[in-house]
Length: 405
Image 1 (spheres, helix red, strand yellow):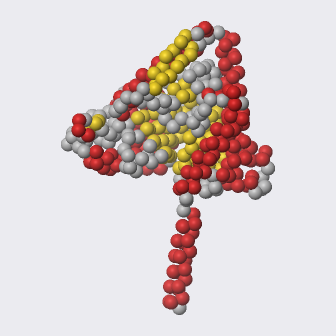
Image 2 (tube, helix red, strand yellow):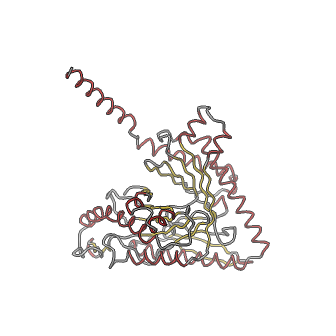
């Protein structure tokens, strides 16, 4: 009898290992599927707008286990809302009538540190945004109506492209679990990584779109268990507009995080300058951080300002410390979001507070390229009023890691 039980247990273990082997994701295949899907999305855009009006765009897809695949499809070129990425451009402006302007971009090959690159990108972004605001102030009412109409048409085309992709080609991402999603969005991974040209439409804001479907719904459509119309009705479509409205509490929260992560207070990574944010209508607020770990000195050595005794260390020593600091950084970021997020008063209960972090560079350190934390404002209110514990509030913080260094 004991021998029989032992045989049964061994068989159960063997079956478990077989199941694990069968469900293990093929990373090479996933990367291949995503790259093919990126090309399909780009082709759908070209078909929607016509080859003459199409300018090449960079569709970026990424997979996050337990969440799904996100395709970032910036409203560039073909959408007439230019969102151009570049490494080291020189921008030359030519003013036109009614506040319009044109520009030209040329590249420069300059070796820069992380801090120098960030400072240059900030200066360039501010220059572009200044031109945009000037154009918005000086354009005629007729031009504003025309641009708002164009923005509405662009939003509709974005949604149409996303719907068609999910319905017709969503199943090509073959390894997703039924509850995992495919999301198509025009929101970039980090603020400041892109520069926006042209009129945003709808006042001074710009439209933030996302369309998502679960793999389970896509499977039901392909198996004929639901109709195309039923599938489309299940899609989650978010259309939020960024706004330039200034809320004092949002500004204060930005200043808090700017101070918390300066070199003298932080014990892990640190920021330089302000922590900018973007208020999205009916969505919430997104704060954008860029964190650093070290400054490169002479002879390939590094100084780590937040760590005592790390004034002159080698690359391997620096990388080892960067990797060690990551878990503490993520935990403290969650804690600070809960503790200081309680000061926010201008958000609705169902709106979100998002902290989007572009991580320090560290090759082969196994840390994310970017990190995004989010929580509903109601959670912060409940914690502040004592309705839930801190542990319960922390458990409700969503953590999304993108990429791997």
